[in-house]
Image 1 (tube, one colour):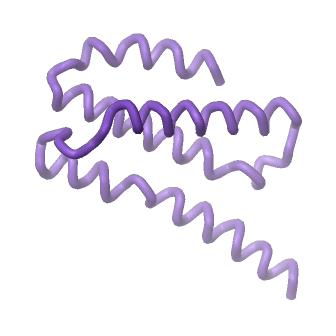
Image 2: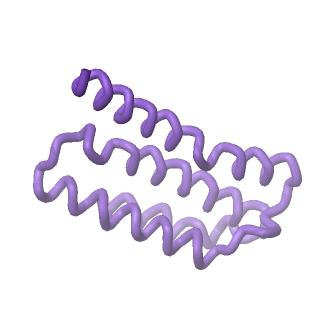
Length: 104
């Protein structure tokens, strides 16, 4: 019983995290605008996810305990690139594309 509940909780968390940013990405694509998305808060969220992910990797914790963070990081990076694209600042995305993967 407990193992089944734990399995359900793990996979439902992953499923929710996989779809967490999709409505925001879809709304941004549909509006063709980055209006309403705060770049500083998006960057802060991304840095927090990266720090936690790095912490978990460093201490060798089992992947299932933090698998939602790589999913959220990818979604945040996609959202960040769309923000830069719709603001006309896609060239500014290059430093972020170089710095963040190297920090993982």
